[in-house]
Structure formats: structure tokens, C-alpha cells
Figure 1 (cartoon, rainbow, N blue to C red):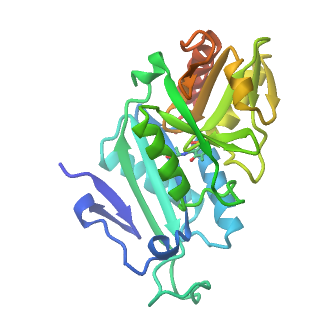
Figure 2 (figure 1 turned 45 degrees about the vertical axis):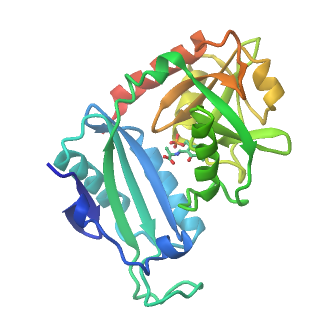
Figure 3 (figure 1 turned 90 degrees about the vertical axis):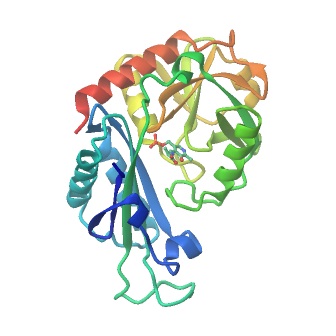
Length: 286
Ligand code: PDD
């Protein structure tokens, strides 16, 4: 059966899920998105994703067309209509479709566009959870407000295409000699003395929801965390490295630009953090 998407108030088959060519998301990337994981039919860490959605739209002066409560209802209905067990719900809100292509915001009568769709992915049993992934490094060529989850993702498309072409699972973006984050994930290393290091939040990176949960869960277990920028050399001298995101949870990194991290295998602390996160996800999904 064809999958169902949500488009501006209606649940429609994917083949009928359409927006205008004048949509400002299409013309200007004038929109915000969120991706929430679904595990065993439940939305994972969704309050955190909705809080970030609210913040992102606020930063670009875009009013949500629905309340956060209603958005969560729609997400849940979409999961149910698609019989989704494991995967993701993608959500995008744009500044709507005006009559033409004018850069300034449209008049108040132009309603924002809200679309959502689901995709299937067995995040728990993904083979790369065991094997880990290789990453490549690329210059971070993005704009200066990466804290906003904007749909303007061309830099990440190019970075992740370069990674895919090199047989790597992610691209780590470099600015001023330091790693900012992955193309669609937060970056972490674990030093030789077991300190978990991840870049501090700010305009330079997206405040990852999974990052936030992992930092909190680690702190609750008395693991040592340092929020600061780190270099590729530090990452290569580290014991372990990993990434976090709604689409992978916690995922080991075993090589950077072809050079092994640690012994070239997913490390025990990474494995433990993944277990802890999955436990948290199972216990708190809605
Ligand atoms: N990406 N950094 C960037 C640039 C991201 O695009 C993402 C998520 C993250 C991790 O955030 P979170 O833990 O909240 O998923 C960090 C989503 C999954 C995507 O674009 O598909």
C-alpha cells in the first residue's frame, strides 16, 4: 500500500503529496525542518525536537501554522496510518507559497506550508552500529547560523555526497582547524583518559537533541564530559569517536580520512552510550 504523507491539513498518498512551485521552501530554502526517530511505534525525544522547532521558527520570524500539541498529534497519526514500527518522521514548515518570487516576507494572508512524511529504518539493528563508520573531513562552508535547523542543506548535500563517494558514512566539517559537526550528526571523541568531548553549543553547530540526551545520560552516570571544540589530530589520538543523531542514535566512528581511531573498532564506551540511549528511548517514547 502506498505510504501516506501530511500536506497542509490533509493526509494523502505520497504520489499526491505536492506543494506549489512558488513555495518559499523551494525558491529560497525559507523553511525549517525536524527529524524525529520512531522506535517500536513511538516517537523518540519528541519534546526536544518540538522545542527546537519552536526555537528555529522563532529565529527566522516564522509562525507555526499549528500548535506543538497539534503537530505531535499529526506526527502520531502519520505513524499510525503508515503502520510505522521503526524509522523517522520528517517534518518541514516553510514561509508558504506567495504569487511570485519576492525576497521579503509575504503578506500575512500567505499561510506557512506544513508537510510531514515517514520513512522506515531499523536504527537498532543497522549493521554499522556494530562495524562503525569511516568519516572524511571537509571544509565547513555553511552560513553563520547553524543553530537554526534550516532546510538550506546544500553544503551538507555536497559534504555527504563526497563522503558517500569515498565509501564513508559521514563527513566531519572543519572550521579554523576544529571539527564543527557531521553533515547530519553531532561529533564526539573519547580521550585516552575517558573524557567524552563534544563541541559546545553555539551558532557554529546545530544543538542536537540526541547530543543533549547523551550528555545528560552520561553525566547522570558520572561519566566525564567536556563541551569544547577539538581538532582532527585530537580525534585521531582519541580512544574512541562517535556521532549522534535521530537517524542513527549513537554510532561509532572507526576511521577519519582513512586513519584508524583507537584500534579501528567501535569502542566499549561508545557501545555503552548506545545501550544507555536505546534504554532511554524505549522508556520515554510517546
Ligand atoms: N540531522 N547536526 C546536524 C547538522 C544535523 O543535521 C543533525 C540532525 C544533527 C543531530 O541532531 P539530532 O540529534 O537532533 O538529530 C546534528 C537530521 C537527522 C537530518 O538532517 O536528517
